[in-house]
Picture 1 (cartoon, one colour):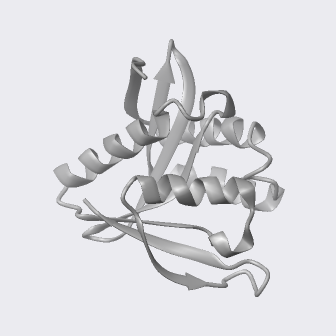
Picture 2 (tube, one colour):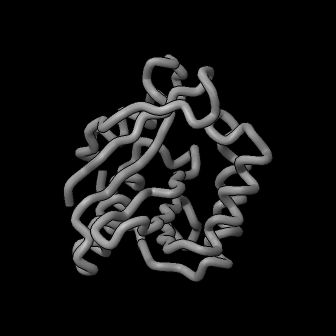
Picture 3 (cartoon, rainbow, N blue to C red):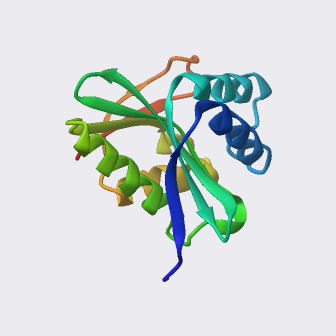
Length: 155
């Protein structure tokens, strides 16, 4: 699909507002209010890029840099009405280019393990796989009911 998406680095305060807007429209993925508040506040301390289509914000990717050579995807979402149009992949590519320019050569992300068979998070996991991420390990930081999968991609 040939769409004209504008992606740009944005101010953390703007990212926090966009995170709240996108989260509200994606309750299937972001259904825990306390976690959503944590995500939004976390945007204030991280590097963010938004995707605009026809002057409407349709996506956000937020990066943190836990190690000098690694970027971790702290939070990412695309407006539900714009899913499957390549916007997430464009955001990912923009973030990768930013990382490469800053001599960061690996990217990681944590998402719900496919073992849970959650249809929404299975799509998320498949999105990351499609974009070159490979599973690294699983962990249960929130207890045995929530197995998370940590994925890695070389840039």
